[in-house]
Image (cartoon, rainbow, N blue to C red):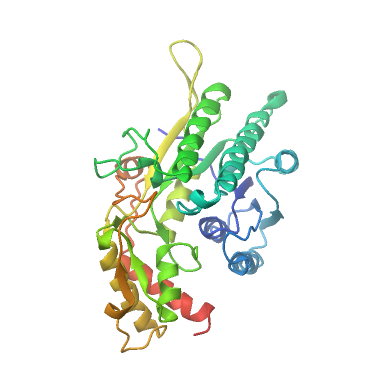
Length: 362
């Protein structure tokens, strides 16, 4: 059985705290009401509209002010700054570390590979080193490192649904390669230094205040401007769209249950390491997805009632780095945590459309 950590009186570091998943996780932890020290780190880079990150941080601040037992701190800084990361660990001595900071996006990794090496490899290495040295001088140190991986590691796996038991040795983008590298690095550090570590492969996360570079957000922007949207692989792509609240619930449950430290037959530590998929286990055809999206945008009043979706779509070939389908096998998550993402696509897109109308004051 996994041991369960209580959030009460814990020091919890969340990197990427102004990001889509990070901000939602911080707010969910605040809502638990447990007395804790929450430290958020983010470099607020301009990969996408910084005002959206600032909006998320303002929502966190408002919520934190209603829970006096929560000590919320935000630090603007970069994972690639080793001195900063070491100082954060030295000052706050985190019990739980959730590394969500990363340069995201498959296509952008083709245009700007440097950003991925700096953040996803060098930055994650700094987190691992800080976790390792948290045990110096027999200190209790980090009790659990949780880190974001991605469904991209599965590449063009023919076998579906994707299982964490599958081989993932054929990434087809630099982004996917960096995420696979994170898993390998974490496993090595887990083995060498007995760091309880859990990697989470997220499947196409969407929802209110999401990332503007994601298809549903970009489609909305273009439809609103009357532009034509391009649907890749002639509409034959399928994605396992996962609502952000389901992702956050999965992360929260995993955080409390670090893999057990134990010794192998050789007397050395077995790596206290685990990997889980968090996805909806219900792939949606991209054409159907966009159709539901535009229906909900009409319903929310973002698009006019007589909007013609047919006139604003163009079916185009597959692009480099993309995969035809993503589909999560979440049986391990269900077995170990009694949880399965289940928010229906229409419900999630309805909440996104309502948020979009309010945020952009349409």
